[in-house]
Image (cartoon, rainbow, N blue to C red; front, top):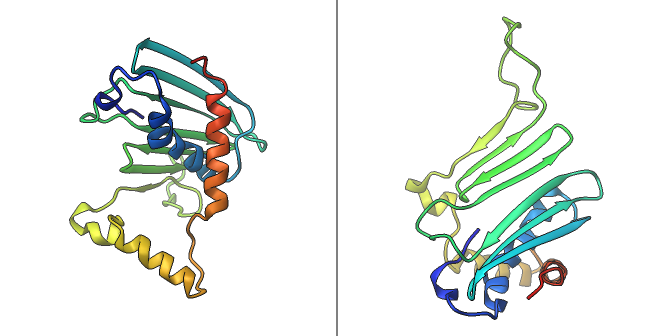
Length: 180
């Protein structure tokens, strides 16, 4: 994860933390299905406005992962990878586009009757950008539609203010480990 140019020369990284890092504090526990347990942060500031962060984490139920964040890469190149590993399950997200859920499939090489099993084999998804309106909610219209539905008392599977408070608490926990 990166945010280059527009933080150049700034030694106050508040904007970087709030515009970029906070998303991982919300996304990773959602993917993992539970909150962070242990969290360890290493940082390298090559020069003012440039900051590299490496966050190792575990979860209470035994998942492990890491997040690399910084202000040094070009936003014009592929730069984001998410890896979360649990017991016989692994999630990979590459550049927000390719998503793969690896599970615990049986070995198939010696089984002539083997078939792909939707209950255990790897699931992969890549959005169809030719049907962007159906595959990828962009803009404020879908957000406002969800908000209107909630105001009408309908149920929607969307984050609430409590989710965002927890993301900010996680971000503060991360920042507390960075010697700035």
